Length: 230
Image (tube, rainbow, N blue to C red):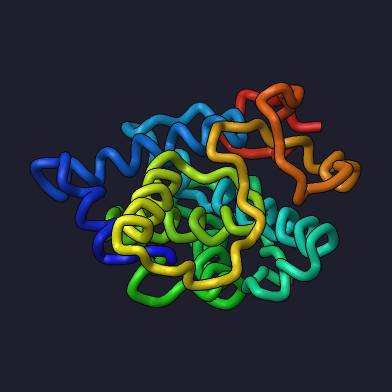
């Protein structure tokens, strides 16, 4: 269901160049991360905020936590998905350009490959981010991670939600059957994440969420976050 050529082609059409589309992807990802973790991030500072790998590794651990909660709440659905079995080591104090920053980024890359099963064609290398060598692959990797995490309840960037809607429209237009038994899906509208230490108290992660849920930020100690670490 994910990443069909038709959806990709239709997603790119409104943009005059691949560079414009890359900028749109960065803007969407920046807004998504800002909403998830209350980060001070935008398209212009996207790589700068993420280059130490601390935000990336913390996000990976958040994804792993969400997957564990989903597996406990929806075991039958979880058996049909590839869920991460572990998180990743993270040095939150890493500074840009240091060995610690490279180590964080490398750990995130290995986690994406091993735990999330992201293919090499959608992966990036450490220097692609640290030295700004391949911005496109870095952005594509984050989008693919978001697609996979959305399957077990993580909020997705707007572009990922649009892709899914387009694919469903194409499927209906072509009268194609679903490729798999439908799985519980996260809400399409933006929703706020609960504090990590409160997620286990949710009554039923498989149940539909409403827009009336109270606003609560994910409590991650991230560089650039406006939320105080506790």
